[in-house]
Image (cartoon, rainbow, N blue to C red; front, side, top):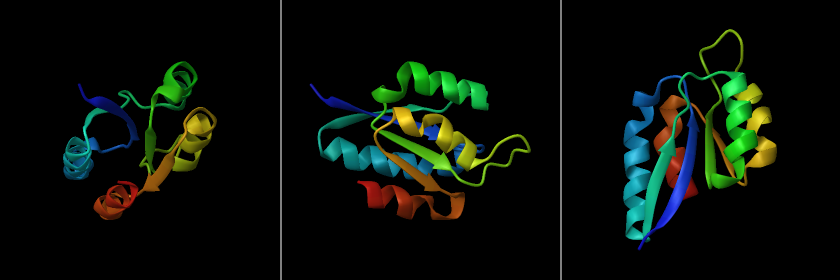
Length: 105
């Protein structure tokens, strides 16, 4: 039986980080974990607030794209919505994702 590592990814272009998530999954698998990834869709401040309030403590890590391409909110807004209810939080922007994820593991 493997333990589950729960990852919440807040990103506007999820396909751009698929390789980083696959790398994280490989690292976790070697260490006896299964990776469970949640990527809210649609992404809005209210969806993130509800997710943080109802399930925030269930996530081992929250990864937030700091440069969200949205006129209504950005990475800071998303961070403030979920920071109080999660234990670990990292920010990234697409060009540096592999480095950011590898630093966590």
